[in-house]
Image 1: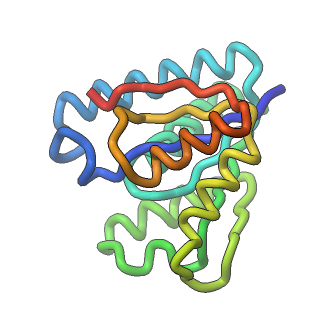
Image 2 (image 1 turned 90 degrees about the vertical axis):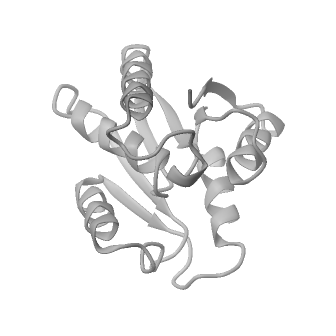
Length: 162
């Protein structure tokens, strides 16, 4: 059994607006198919950083697939206890719902620090055997995470956001 971590963009960095946009629906379908393939090939533990967008969508897909594969596990690796505190009410509700269904929650810091997100991204890479990234080369946290995975020799599967 091997371990998979997720990384990818926040909604505002993606080339569409809203989850009902056909491009977002397609991306989520491609993510689900890839996660299913990973489960079929022996992935059993998944890690999500619980950021808005790709992290949470992948977590929701894993939770949905747990209904068919109760043996798989989902761990949330959150950067700090207050990660969602500035999000809107609906995003906070969704975040807490996902957290409540995770098998484990690893909290890296009690309070927000300027480097807690970067520490979370590094932890995601260090915990996994394979990184699944929604990435198209843009600078930022996802690029740093993909680069860190390459530096540590982690296999990475890249899914284009488009």
